[in-house]
Image 1 (cartoon, rainbow, N blue to C red):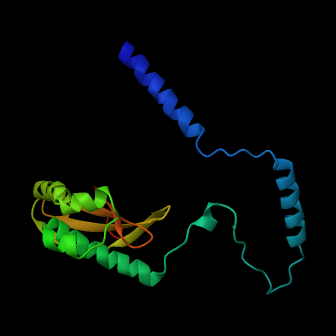
Image 2 (cartoon, rainbow, N blue to C red; image 1 turned 90 degrees about the horizontal axis):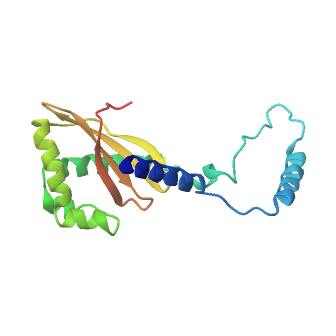
Length: 182
């Protein structure tokens, strides 16, 4: 009974903290509303054919997210495939010398071989490695761009999920459910 009560209290605390997450103190909401009304009144002009401009959200979360270029995306996918193949092959020298990592846990786990060991045990239980399929860009999460690389094994295929920081350094790696390129 004590455990159940403790679990319920912990869950309530998590929900309470999540609900309080990104609140800001807006004492001047009246002024902001008036400013937005004035701005929208100024922009509401009758459109003439051929002069319509696309609407761009310059204040919301989309304004903070920068989409990567096609060439940068291609470079990340190529890096992800090469990194995946080196990681599955447990090629420690290539992993340490050929890729850049974010400082901290990621860099440390590569340098001391922990990442290799974790992936090697997953690969060993998946059967013989047959190779990779075409990688693709996943969702962007904040400053990170995610790349998925489908990995073919004789027993159990899976995807390598690699997160790249905005500066192109590898920030995280994990395996994911097998999906082919969309």
